[in-house]
Length: 232
Ligand code: APR
Image (cartoon, rainbow, N blue to C red; front, side):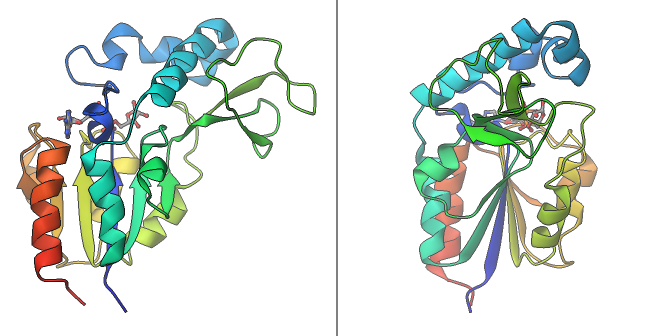
């Protein structure tokens, strides 16, 4: 049995594919305040603006291509059992070939009913408009976990994280909870790596080996380490 690698990714892994992060300078939240586009209250108040924000995310996602970091993460499956837990709503991990991807914050290429969260549909065009309804007759909304909403995949993600033999974080500021808490659910003593060019708190740096580089360069380096001596 090969060892189990859990890769936990954030917006930084898709930055080199041309998708903006949220909290870097000129990040998404600087141009669109969270409370105006990413909360249930915003959806009630101004659904048009919310749809516009996510339509743009969907359009950019459809135009983007997976980068070398996504591809190397997928290639690790040749050597290890790999689960990707991503905070990203894009589908670049899947398109790079990763076969086990858990989306904690939803998926931009899906929409769902606004009265029944189990009615989820794929969308294969970039724009979702007011007036497009689910089979129960209610407005379709993006299949996204907004601020203030529960994170239904969190218990699954915790269970998987607890089985990791190696834990890798790529491109996340680790400030959004509960997602960021995964780092602390790992078994004690396992190797944990963080690939991210940003600055982190002492409490994070105590947990990880920090490869302070962009996702593609950092993944190239870590891929080399993990595949030179495959841990079985
Ligand atoms: N390679 C790797 N990391 C990068 C790169 C890059 N090329 N460019 C930027 N980063 C890093 C930044 O240093 C930062 O630590 O990516 C991180 C992006 O952080 P955030 O914008 O906070 O994104 P993320 O951690 O994914 O946010 C979590 O917040 O708003 C919510 O739902 C949204 O899922 C998102 C969650």
